[in-house]
Each structure stands twice: as C-alpha cells, then as structure tokens.
Image (tube, rainbow, N blue to C red):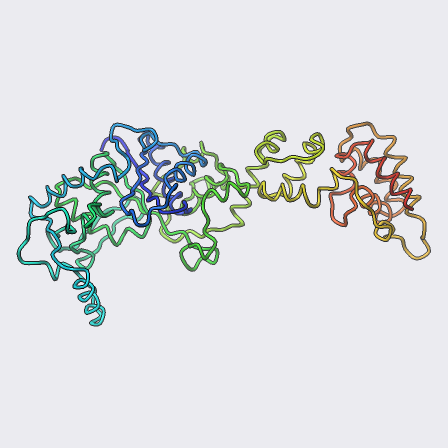
Length: 472
C-alpha cells in the first residue's frame, strides 16, 4: 500500500448521476494529489438492469469533465479485463477458496421459502437474517445454485474512515449474503472485493449508503485473509430544499445534459468538488490545478451536501467570463447573420447569460435586433412624448442622427455615451434615449442605446434612425 490506487466502478444501468460523478471526481483527485493511479472499472454483473450504450456514456461523461484514468476498459492495463462480466473465472476461483475454508455454501432453499421467512420476521418486527436459517449440512456447489457467504464470526466491527473518523456497526449488519447468483454472475458485495484486491486498490472512495454494508465487506476480508483498504465516505447529495437525497423527481439529471445546456466542464468540475468538500482557502472558483493542489479527504464534510442550482449557474457564468470572445463564440456554438457584430456583443452575453443555452436564446430573443432591422410601432416610438410635446421625437432623432454622424467608426459604448448624453441631459433623458433605443431595436427590452450604436456600427445606426424619422 505504498502507492495510492483509487478506482471508480460504476454499473452500466443508465445515465451518470451527479452523485456517481462526484465520487469519481474525489477518487481521481485523491489519486492525482498523491501521485497515484486511478482505475476505471465497469461493474456489469446485473445483466437484467444493464442499459445498452451505458458504458460508452460513462466514458464520454468522465472525459467531458476532464477525468482521465490510467487503466480501464477502453485503454487496457496490467490488471485487465476491466469489465466484471469478463472476470467470471476469477470470481469462481475465489469462491472455491472460500468453500475450501468453510466460508461459503450453496443455498439449498427456494425463493419462496426465503420470502416466507422474510415476511415472518417483518410480522415479528425483527430484522430478517438468513444466517438464522443456515443449513446444518453443506452440499457440494454445482455452480448452478446461488453460493452464499458463511459469516466466520458474528461480532461488532470498527473501522477508520479517512473522512468520517472512527465508525462501527454490530451483529445486525452481518449476514450470509449471496456471493455468486444462480446465473453464474457475482454480486457486488463479492466481486468488488476480489477486483480491488487484484487491482491493488488502496483507497476506496464511495457514497454514504455503503456504510451499513461495510461490516459484511470486513467479514469477507477476514475470511479471505486479506488486508483492508482505506475507506473514505462521501456525504449524500441533497435536493434543492436540503431535506432529502437528490433524485430524478427532484431534478437530478444526466451529467451530459449539463453539457447540452451550455455548462462548461471546468465549471461542472468546480461545482461538483464543492459538494461536500471545501478548500482551506475558502475560495469558490477553483481551477483543475487549484483542486489538485488543495484536495484533502480530511476536509470532506459529514453532513449532506445541498445541490444548489443557483450556485452552479453562478460558477458557470464566472467560468464563461474567463473565455476570450472568439472562444466564447466557438465553445458556445453561437452563430449570427453578422459575425463581426456577434464578437462585439460577447461582453453583453458574458454579463447576462449564465449558460451557453441562455446565450443562444438571447441571440434569438432580445438581441435579435442586432442582426435584423426592426419593425417599428409609431405609438411605442413616440411613447415618451408628454402633453403638448407632439412631434418632438422626430426632432430628437434627427439631432441624435447628427451626433452619430460625427462619431468615428468603431466607437465603443463609452465614447458613444460621451457624445449623446449632453444632449439627452439637456432635453430629457427619457425623451431622447427611449426613442433612440426603440428606433434601433424595435423592442421594449434591449441593450442601452450606446451599446446598440457601438455594435451596429455607424452605417447601420444611421440607416435605422433614418427609417424611424421617415415613419414619423
């Protein structure tokens, strides 16, 4: 155990939930922080629940986030194969070792018998324990019936957790669980222990739900005569309300849905790292390098971590703001009729959009006016004229047009503002700036007139002002 080896071992039974990805991230961070090795292993022994395409989806999800592995099903490695379904002979070998030691036996009972005992225990309000019905004589295992583990000793177990400290559980957590099912496939409880042993895994990072099963695992380590790896428990991820575990009904999504919605992988990694962990510095915006430098399992919290959508949006917007204008357009898959104007409005998008999906919606919504000449409503155009001021809007627009003609091409919003504001202050800001903005945008909501003029450019601005004056 001189070198740190961690692993992520998901089941290919559907989409990648944020909880699973958070576990992968923490295991990867710990391995990288300590100069160790990170392994990707696929636990595909539950064929009834396996979803086609899930393995490729797992790999794509991790790669999108920037989590890479040293050994895995797609790249191989010294401990191949990395699909549990390809390791059945290995599990049988270790099952026979347990039988030889007297720690495993074939289950002679039918499912109906076991269910009857289960119902009886429920009626008597006591936990169902299979070991209370253990057969007195053990038959020879033919490989066709389920093989059960025979708990060597019923006792209280205590273990150290790198994140939670000392944990313990008693006899109620120990039972004769199934090692290999009737279909020949191992259960998780058995297979992962064999795999971790052979793949030389030193540190197991996993969710809080595995605490109650740990005594079973410790009992199996003892039966096999192998050293325990180190354990590190991650807190559960709670929904927005912070009252229950995040689930599909609470908005839990496939991790790649966030990619489609326009989240950056750097932001997603940053956010996931803060779900149950915090750096000593207290910083909230953390790069991959920051995380690798500061990650420490001892700073993982015990209490549930609330999935705060607003915090994720904030972090994503901060990461989007770090991009150059060209990268923003490229990574956001943004397009418009006038590419040169698109680059100019990136500062607007950076200020307002929290995801690239929002940025795209803005381009087709309130910012559409920057790429298409508007259709004007004369009532809205003259909407700021007060009583006795009929006709003043036309004069104001003509004055603004004259001021714009004096601007140099490419003037930025501040330069435009410096030219227009003295006139607006003299005549009334609403009376001047409203019709100017509406004449250029044709919308009741749009960027300010100075930004509009800067983005549209001198020539297009004059054309739109002229069109509005002609209507009047």
